[in-house]
Image 1 (cartoon, rainbow, N blue to C red):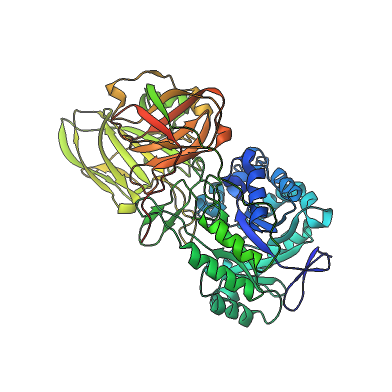
Image 2: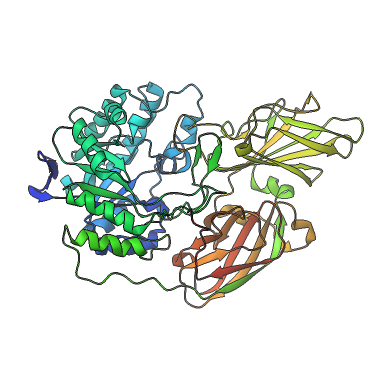
Length: 593
């Protein structure tokens, strides 16, 4: 019998009445050394439960390889820490998670097959899922409530009613969990829309809803769909996410707290999305694609009660007051903000151009005809450098045509000189260029800005997406260099030398050192830099872009060390100076009105 059971209008935990007051907090978006701190702050706000998704694409980066449960992905450790803090856990393993996460969590090695029917009864999909669960569930079963652990419920798929209506597939996921030893309560989760609840529901399985407002109407729709059982909002949206080039999204804390009060006054259970958003470290952000492709920023602050750096924000205190009206809240005082590093300038005095050194970073794949997509190169994230020559008899001006466009941002060079940029979000395919000589070397550096995480475009390929021609003449004979550019080993292969003007306007790595007395949280500010990625002591902080809204990158205290520290930037465009700044204040951009 599962530890968590249902009655006609609520939950029982070990036979006693229990209301789930939960907050979403994704272990893979938080530095592991800070998990215990964040869990403690969840309990102090009055939460009795935390919820997390599981990113299939990171846990199983290779279809034939082992499961990755190290570092940011050490879910068993995270679950142990939750139990030690006295918190229950809701697990949402997907297989699809959305979460504004790269590819919605689906592995690129799976979505690269254009014929596969994702999230369906297609055996190619369910067989891959079954192999993943065979690896995933054994190390998690000791953390289920049945074994004395904190996990009291597990989700079947994720907002499936917004995607499909393959009930046989949902039954397969349900049975796949049960047959591998999951005894705990299973539930589905869909937007509070009658059609979504109907398509995403599974008879005999608890249905929950997602919404951020219109509490009474949303709960009524859930009750119309499910005549009895607990009412639960599995994602109560109290903030939102940001795309590059948009304002920073916020939600008034008083308004969100009032809706939370309505939810709890109605007797419903809740999972606050997000309690603590965290960060899309490395190259893990997702993207949306409605009318145009729109990648997400590095921060996943989400305007949550606990800010990106783990400090209580206005919503933390407002929600704590609301929860105290409906449930017991710890008598301990609310946590104070963590110490911050004093402003620290960093001089980046050494550099190395990227394009001349790609041979040290990867082996090229030769294509005698058209360029090969990043997916066909087996590249989940990062860049591809494509290199060929332009067969002209003399210097001339003409049009480069990239049939099918680029995925997602292409920088074009002729004989090493930058000649233009093409972006998927602007639907660009043609670039006028001047070819300086016969046989000029054409290089195209294509950045994957994040895989679509929602809707029918999940699995859209990256890299160059079709033939390339110059004034109608097809360009063949490509060297395709897959560049993940996400691990610390990348930096070991870079031959840094004293910076000079030659590296100021081309893609280049830039290196600097700085001293720290006592490590503390900080925020990396990059005035004068344009677009790229940042590492401190080999830890990949993520992407920066002066397009905004985000203008600082969060630097967790555990990334720093007493004494000398290293900062490396991969600047893709151009710089106007050689200095960066570690500051004590985040800048996520101007807020939406």
